[in-house]
Image (cartoon, rainbow, N blue to C red; front, top):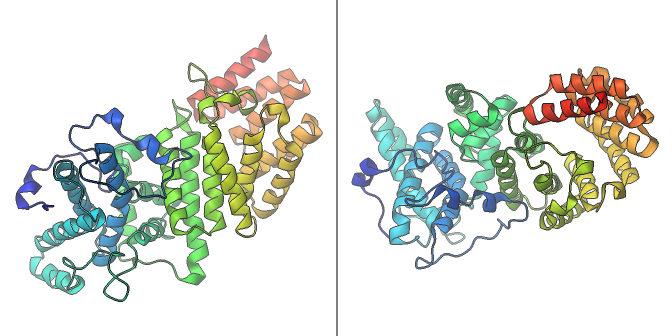
Length: 471
């Protein structure tokens, strides 16, 4: 298996790959053949790495390999050399070289090691050619292990004979770095999607409805903020807090994908499924961590309803009106099993409780079969644990379903101050007022909710409900 020489660098295709390898498209592969949906769809088994044979390797197989190994390779380089930006560029060059060569020459026996070796060479070349060449050469010489180009890659060597920690561990360490406490939540999300998820800056900007230049600046500031931070996992006393930040970022990414807060689309499939893919990766590394298992269960169970959430013209369909035959039953089975496993892995936390609630919704064959008393009991536990206004609003809905709409309205009114007039509060109030028969007040609340959301599908749905009550 040949490795790229200097001549390949000048001939590499531009813009084929992002810095972390997202959408690693081999030449000639049609965009519609890319396997993003199959990579991260609920129920997909990403924990198994399939052996590949050069004579049977497809373009999709190569893309899978590049997506799986990209964050591991980036993590290995950042850990070894400590240069985030140049490491991203070097990984991109290695991925482009692989996408160009592997379809013709076959996949090497150790693809991760090949990528690390090539990216390391590209990175050291880049460091040596900087303006402060002589000073950088001394730094590189000090930082580069003597066996950097001949030793087995991380995790590949025999125990006690030079084998280092499994390179996949770097994925989690990279996530910890991207969710560093020095960063704002918005910066954590952007850097995570860029460095670990492999989305391009343009894709992240579109997902957040901002200009590409604005997102590029946000990512650059985030990289500068973590420059100099040690590339290692947190100490045990800090681990729980840092892991909570990682999971919160993945949860926010999923929520934005499942119900976009602004724009013309209700659902951003790429963000939701990327969050699921990354959470699967974290679970592979922390299989006995109940919070991780619970978060994955919650995502899978929620995403399973996606086929029924919109009508033929893209209009929003509320949960109680959805055609449940369209729900993904394979994903529901997986998510339910994950939820049960999460509850067995330790004390029930926020994600485990939310997953259990989602499972009860998904298990109901009809809306009227939903076990609302059990859901209310779970919400009581949840709001006792967390001050999250969304959990309190969910509890208010459960109260209404168990004790009637007027009881639910009392709970909604009690939340008015804490929620700061959020449009979802108006939407729930409108629904409960409609169920209570107060159509004039319900119409006013629907219109207030429509005015408060930036999501076009939600606004259309809320106004349609208001218009129906005016007839």
